[in-house]
Image 1 (cartoon, helix red, strand yellow):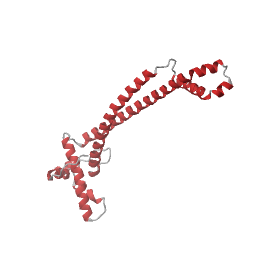
Image 2 (cartoon, rainbow, N blue to C red; image 1 turned 45 degrees about the vertical axis):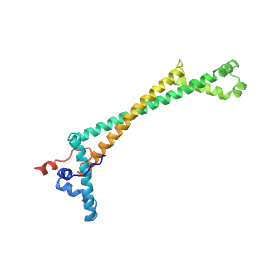
Image 3 (cartoon, one colour; image 1 turned 90 degrees about the vertical axis):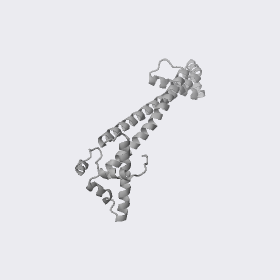
Length: 211
C-alpha cells in the first residue's frame, strides 16, 4: 500500500474510528511492557491512518464499499487467471498438434512401405522409430476426432493469435493483481485494527462513540 506523510488530522481521523475499548486493544494483545505498547500503538495508528487516507482518496469509501470493491477485484483477478490458463492450455494443444502433423508427414512414406511389405516384422525392426512416431501421430488425431488435418501454417497463425491474447490478458492480470493486493491490504488493516471479524459488518460502537 502507498505510504503517505503523517499529519495530526489523519491520526485524529484514525482515532475517531476507534471506540475506547478498540483503541486500548491495539496493544493489549502484545502482552509486553509499556514502552513496547506505546511504540506498537503508534505503529498501529499509522497503519490505520494509511487506511483512512486511502478510503478518503477513493470517494470517502465506507467499510461495506471496501468489502464490495475488494471482492470485485478478487473476482476480476481470478477470472483473468482462468482466462490465461485456458489460453495456455490451447497453446499447448496447438503446439502438440503441430508436432504430430510434422511427425506424421515425415514418416508417412516409411509407413506406406511398411503396409506394402505386409507389416513385415523385419521391415518394422529396421524402421521401428519412424513407424512408432507415425502410429503415435495417427492415434493423436483419432483422439481429437480429426478427419482432415489442418495445415501447419494455419496452426502457427492460430498460435500467434493465442499468444497475443495471452500477452494482453497478462498485462491486465498484473494490474488486477496489484489492485487486489492494495485493496486486501487496506481491508486487512481495517479489519485487524478495528477488531472486525472477517466477512462481517463492523460493530456500531464507532457510531455510539460519536454521540
